[in-house]
Image (cartoon, rainbow, N blue to C red; front, top):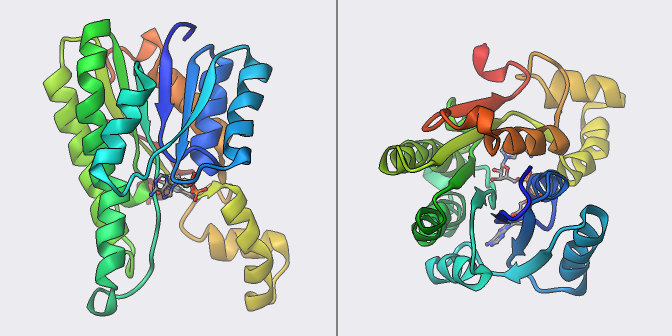
Length: 256
Ligand code: NAD
């Protein structure tokens, strides 16, 4: 039961971050949603989670590409028992033509943001005598694919940051772990399926199994609910001695 705990999830107005926020709220945690926008819909999402789950939920705008914004998010929230570093973007291009501004943005949002939020959150966790840092890495935090240099570098980097965080917090009832999803069925991924069907002239099932999930042996996407459940598990007493490691939710991708 996570009631009385505050969970901050970066990049959580869609996809995996929102799925994790919902599962943490169902487990009783108060929620801080975040993205770089500040729309009615963003705040409505928080209100909806609050009313369905009977918890407090707020939306706080902060741009995870900016270190000062990352730290301000934690300060504005005022409490942070559970920190989920989830915000992330992707760009696909060969190293020799990779746009420098894309490299910088991916390293800032997918890696450096977690350094800044963790730096701001650890003193709050130490004061509270309990904490959970959950970094959303990727199968690409453990293996590589061509044309994803910045993403793979950032995701390997966040696995390293996770280990250091765990060591610096060892014995303080604060754990740090990275979840490494394979291919997850989010609205963004769902939206790519019709295009892929056209491009490959395949039906939905074939394009999912043979093209999109070519590297995922289970031939099934992970769901945002499953990632949320994994985050809830990492917050449980059963996981109190799990720290500095990775949990793959990838249908066997990294076993290949
Ligand atoms: P998504 O695009 O649905 O969600 C990304 C979230 O980050 C959004 O809420 C977006 O608003 C937010 N965001 C982007 N830039 C931001 C910024 N500058 N400041 C604040 N928020 C920002 O994607 P997703 O698939 O849900 O991805 C979430 C995380 O999971 C990412 O770190 C991604 O690398 C990782 N991941 C996704 C998959 C997958 O298959 N979808 C697989 C492995 C890892």
